[in-house]
Every structure is written in C-alpha cells, then in structure tokens.
Length: 324
Ligand SMILES: [Zn+2]
Image (cartoon, rainbow, N blue to C red; front, side, top):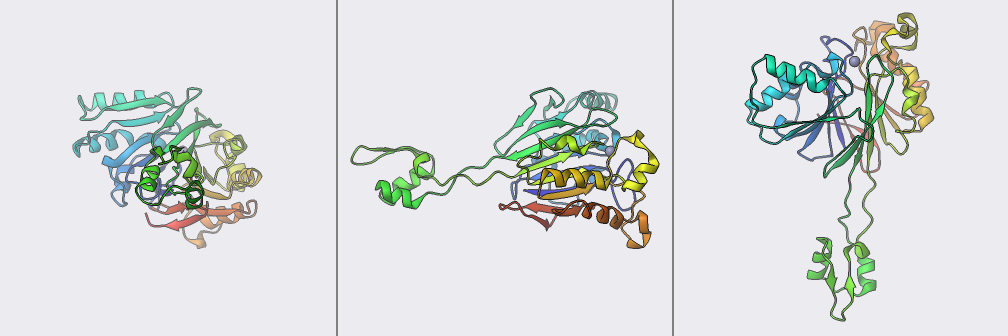
C-alpha cells in the first residue's frame, strides 16, 4: 500500500505546503484513489506517478474548501485528457451540489465520462472494487466530517505443495488449473477444489485516513486491526489552548494519545497550520515542535507528512519512507 501526500497544509497553502490531498494505491497497481482534493491538487499530481486517467475513485472527508476546491479543475482536466471511464466520488452531502454547480456555471455541458456520486454520510456506506473496500466513520468537526477506512482485498495465489502431494495431485497441468481457480477431477474420480490446495491469502492491510476532527478518540473502533492512521494535527497543544476549541481541530498530543490507546502501529500526521515551518530554527513554530509533542505520547512508528512525501505499508505492516 503506497501513500503520497499531495498537500499537507491546513486551511491555506503556504510556500512549503499545498492544501489537503492524498493519493493512495495498492502497491504498484496502476489504479489509485484520491482522498480529499484541495485547490491545486492537479498541479501536485504533475509531480508524481499518478495520472487522472488511472484515478479510480475520490473520497472527500468534508465540504470545507481546503479539502474539495480542487475538484472542478481536476475533473475538467481529466475531460481534456480524454478520460472515458466513470469516475466515482464518495463524499458527504454538499460535494455533489458544489461540483455540479461549478461545472454548470463554467459552461461544462458534457463530460466524456460519467461521474458517479456516492453519498458517504449515509449509514451503511461501503465502497467496493476488486482491490479494496472502504467504509466511512463519523468524526467531530464544524461540518459533518468522516474518516475513510480502506481494507485491501487479497487473493491467495500460492499453491500448498505439501497438500497437493498429500492428496496425490500429479505435478503439471492440473496444478496450473487449480492455481487458476478451477476444480479438477483426478483419474481415480476424486474431485479437488482450489480452496483445498491454496495457501491462505496474505493479511489485508488496513489504513484509516481521517478528515478534520477534534475528537480522535472517536476512531478507536475503526482503528481495530488497522496498520496505519493518517490524521490531522493542526496545532501543538499549547497553540490549540490559545486558539480555543472554535475551529474544532486536533493537537499533535490529542492524536498521539488516541493512536497510543488504539495500539495502531503506524501514525502519519498531516494538515499543519501555516505557522509551522520546516526550519528547526522556527522554535515553537517549527514542524519539529509538533513531532516532539507527538513522540512524547505515542510509542509507535511516527511520520510527519510533507508535500510529495510518500510511504509504503509493506506486507508485514511496516511503514517505510518511499518514492512519490
Ligand atoms: Zn481542513
């Protein structure tokens, strides 16, 4: 599972960071998913491996502009590039209306592909395709906001040689048929089903990608069995106390504590206030201040996202810095 951060700033872009968007793919699969689409997301995409043609589905966490103003431009660029495949957009109420109005008032009368909107704020929402299933989990913010929990679909591809020998299936063509999922009949009339001779499928990797939220503890259930949490940490605790609860965001401490309680082994923080700079000389306004705060409450593997930073979650559930 590979994650590429296309934007990591809260509210407004800065010279170092664009507003929120995250590209997610199952390892080297061509098809990929986009979680949130702040303004300028299509510009960031030009700088990494993902193309609009291979974009399978978009998941929007909430209606705030820094998470969805990039949609009309991204959709019309896909159109100019001749995309034909339907584009699925899973989003809470308001996003479809926003996109349709933007397209209508900018005189986009026809697209060469269909947009399929799925309302992710409906109970029982579950997106499914051949690679993954995705559910939505309600958070606490100034507008309805959601976390998406993506569960990878895995298939068994390896034969259990020991079992084949025990059952007396002769090596060769019959093994190939079983591996392709076909049932076979042996010369003595016994029927062998693929399920009898395949290794169990690899463990599904699970990532929880959260939208804006001031109660990270709401994710405890969604984090059961998850390998990775991606969550906003807009401010340090001290800065959040000063700003007051009005914006309904989380501090690095709040997210780190919830991640620690849940036992999730990997945590990536993102969506940082524009005050935080890369340079360590910025002191309390340095991104290092957020990192140090999170580290003192979370003992797992911690990452702080920057634009175009990429990570993979490998088969063993390890988080590794990767190429965008
Ligand atoms: Zn935001």
